[in-house]
Length: 323
Ligand code: NAD
Ligand code: UDP
Ligand code: UDP
Image (cartoon, rainbow, N blue to C red; front, side, top):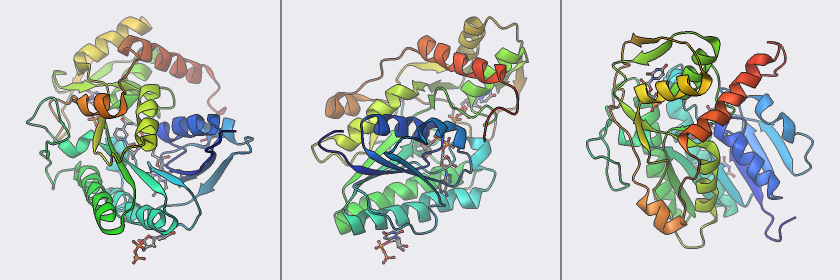
């Protein structure tokens, strides 16, 4: 066990990123409390941790108060895929706003350091490219993505107000599109959609003309950055962009996935969703300088690992998983 063993709360710990974070922290010997309401998270993602003595799970919705004693809090609870966060938009805003207030109130009471999983979506459809942390964004407050974008923007405001007003030690990272094993196969995000479609030999759905860009970060790199930010000795509240600056179009992503799976899928056009950002790419100079962090896993390598995960899942009988 490490000398500096901590009691760490991970909200949203049964989700895609949260479960990888729990793996990392449990592996480091910390006492990890995973809190999740299983809206998009799955027990299956954390099943392998259940018999570890330093791992605990609590079913709880963070829009309600939570009284526990911890040293650090990673606040990840919030659906991240447009399909999921638009399913109940008011609840999405509540998770970011009420959920953050509760977790900040908890951090204030117990003197814990708290990290917020913010998002590149706070930049909206950006007019500055690549996006630096100083850019204030271009978000439509009325559109279908606003419940997520504006909720996350308000959460950042709350973090900085609790820091200024109550001296809570905060860390804010802005996560750019991240992918890897344990992405939900039906959550509609582009990497999981394309991989599942390719493996099934179905048409690959390109929204719009496919020229819109994103920069995709492999999950292990993202977790490295997140943990480095929480652990930084200096007072680095952020916000800090964490993502992979290798920008590609949606069409290029489709062609890489077709090449790596050997699929015979056709590309078919679908309407571009409303307010879909045309380009997105992080400037990670600040993360490089302050955290000495940058991503290491190439797109092809990350896609190979993710394809292997989905191929394995699809080979299992439909009833095998516990959702
Ligand atoms: P995810 O949907 O897999 O995980 C979110 C988790 O939060 C799920 O386990 C869900 O059940 C849980 N949750 C939702 N509402 C809750 C509530 N009220 N109380 C308790 N638990 C609740 O998504 P993810 O991709 O793992 O994203 C994790 C965090 O990272 C989110 O805050 C998201 O906004 C942020 N983020 C992710 C990405 C990405 O590309 N994956 C990009 C930017 C930001
Ligand atoms: N809270 C919580 N756990 C705690 C402490 C506080 O969930 O351990 C919640 C509590 O419901 C409160 C919110 O966090 O409404 C904000 O707490 P704070 O102390 O900032 O403000 P309060 O509303 O108590 O004045
Ligand atoms: N996209 C697509 N086909 C799909 C799913 C998504 O062309 O089957 C596009 C989507 O319109 C967007 C990009 O891929 O331009 C990334 O979408 P995702 O939902 O993964 O993330 P976000 O838009 O939140 O960055």
